[in-house]
Image (cartoon, rainbow, N blue to C red; front, side, top):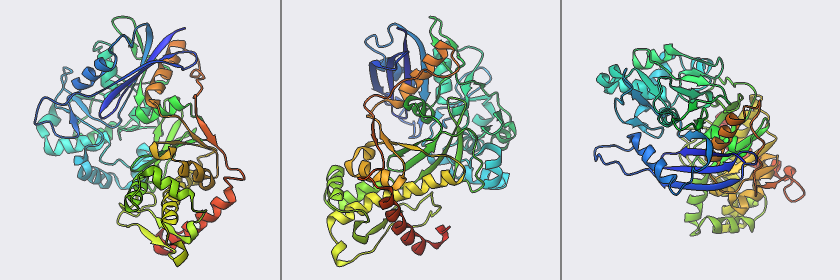
Length: 477
């Protein structure tokens, strides 16, 4: 039995799993938070990349990596690690969640010609999270640092480089590269013209490896696979294939699916990323997901489990109550200045259980609208994987198959991105055309049936759609 490991370096911590390369069974695991920055002037959204190595060492304590033959690395996407011509860090890394580049993103959007021009170039409209927007911010506000930067790495690129002992060659993968704003999943090539548009000069950029291509070997002889971004690693860890979609219900919602081709959406609603297998991950996002449930639960004096219990006491359609869940405006559909709306209030519907169900149905109808955006661009959705704590609530698991109209898979909580990185390492170690077939243990599948009747879901969605189109006619088809 060969043992492989997957490392996932997120915004706040590092997680590691050691797995059986043939079955994917997790043999050992560890995690550790990133150390608190020693420099008091380090601002939120920045980090010295060295803390990721310290965290990695802490997570691997106790012999976790003993006997491992190959390692894969997953990390937060969109970061910016600028190095000078000698490979020396120019400034702290700017992370994906730093908001400072919003103005830079807007300027770049206009300078290239709007959403249609950007989606034709890179399959997406770059927001402030994208690396290309961070480069523009740097050129505008730290011009001396901008002039020093000769190359840029993403967090996973930097970690792979460190593990390999700082080789001359820098590498990345197509999945993570597709989140930079200057690599095109449509053509599979870098766009140095977009780098120059943002920064003012060209950069040395890492080689883009194929899905099963190793990045190299450590001085100790461990194989290091190409690595990838966290969403791409999670898709690999879940074993997604064409027809599979993921709905991740954090405070906001992330919805993506495996597709054979890049999706070019001139409206900019769909961001076309590459995945870690040679396919693509078209993605849409909603601003309102689990926070809708949390806000409603607080209003009713319940926790999330209590809200779920209440919702199960109501019936499909919530006695006519419809909650349009645009509490913070909305991205999909494009309603940036909207507010949430509760309609259909009658004497018989004004009860806590109906409001609870309306919150769940409203959140899931909004998510189903986002899935429909993908479907309208030719993306097939035959099965949905539901991630996040909200996805494990009984009411969400019960109602989602009705509204999505397809089976819903609820995986157990776990380090899916780290497991995906380990699966990539096993693939690179084996050198096979396809990744190893790893089962997803303890996953629960809920299919539309007599209890989860899709016809009932269609009626609920029609009720929701009528309210949405009346209050926001710009969304009507």
